[in-house]
Amino acid sequence: MAELLKMCGISKSFPGVKALSNVSMTLNAGEVHALCGENGAGKSTLMKILSGVYHADEGEIFINGEKVSIENTKKAQQLGISIIFQEFNLCPHLTVANNIWLDRQPKKGLFVDDRKMLEQTQAILDDLGLSISPKALVRTLSVAEQQMVEIAKAISFNSKILVLDEPTAALTESEIDRLFDIIHKLKSKGVGMIYISHRLEELARIADRVSVIRDGEYIGTYLYKDVTIDKLVHLMVGRELNDKFPVYKRKIGDVLFEARNIISNKVNVDNIKVHSGEILGIAGLMGAGRTELARAIFGADKTFHKEVFVDGKLVAINSITSAIKNGIGYITEDRKKDGLALNMTVERNINMAFIPSLCKKGFIDEDAAKENAEKYINNLRIKTPSMYQKMRNLSGGNQQKTVLAKWLCNDIKVLIFDEPTRGIDVGAKYEIYELMNRLSDNGVAIIMISSDLQEILGMSDRILVMCNGRVSGELSRNEATQEKILRYAAGLRNEEGKGA
Image (cartoon, rainbow, N blue to C red; front, side, top):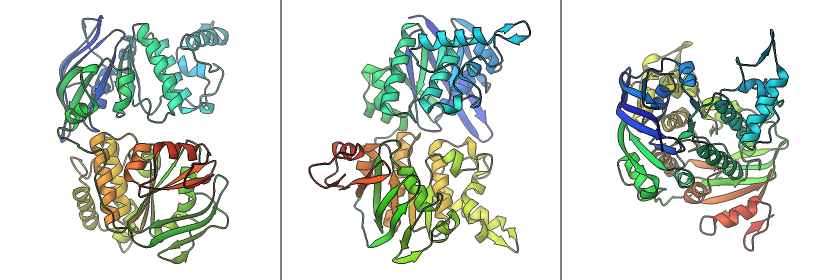
């Protein structure tokens, strides 16, 4: 296979941080080259250098054997490089066709040639085997369909180098299958792809080679068929993780939280109880109502007839403020959108929900704020060059720890985790699990919503399964299996236990 790309000795520093040190990799035509590493290892920085977002301090880049200088993203596109990040670069209120050809629409005289643009768009969509209408507004498409539009846009630039950054993070199994079909189709056309993912098990279906970066340094490149997942994990984290989930014996106490008659426009749940020190897992298919249940409990969505008891006392939870006041916290599934202020510092994010307690005579006590932030940065081992670093510059795992720190500043008795490890690498996942165990050891009642069945089975003491906005089954840790959970999630009755 012809070599499309060669990156040699790439180094990059930011204030207080060495992001990359002498990193190299190659990409061949018709190849999927997986790029693996923990959050913060330098994968995204390397790809941003390739796409012209950042400039390398040292190193060289060759495209088709010729040395190139990638000054900006436009130059990268001209060289046939396209990157599809987790946050799509699409205009939601424009059509599929207009998004694909934005600023490049074919013209007839002074006006856009809509007919030609639609024909060109349809040809690309047909070539990829997609049944999306060129006239559809992007905001009406699913996440998976929007991703396909991004791929179609890359093809419209005649890109021969395509980077996919965590492409399956928000996709269902059937959508992942469709994506992989398209990846194989692109391989057959000679497109080379760099594939970044924390879901190591899916790499076996598409990857030809894999390169590992750890703490900004190049560890090695391997034929994927020659490495195991355990070997990859060891290369990524630099240590053995003998168990995916920490072995832990929890001390479960009395019922700490109970909600009755949780009825909203999306859910109808008779009763939910969580004990002190218990982790209650909430499983179900996409659209089953898991997140809606969490929002109803937390007072973020309007409910009817809901009764909530904390420590045996009836409390009114009709708003987020009242939930926090009664010791309930909620770590949302979209930490970047709902859990963090990305342009603010780590210190301000940690203290965000604690500011009233830090104020003296109407002003924030900066010394107290600094002391509080330092405490949680140390306790939760948040990796940051400074507490005054912008939040957006931290890795996904450290962002998640910061959200957790924000809630721990308050007297939290009940903590809801919605997709606690989505988009987080294996090493950081293990640390989050350990933190959850520490919280349960301190008597916190935890509700954990997850679409990762292994996570549900590995961390939950008890599991509720949802289907169509209702609880369709309940399983103890000892009796729970993936098969039983999936049957309840589909609304089917299991032979044993409670069911629909």
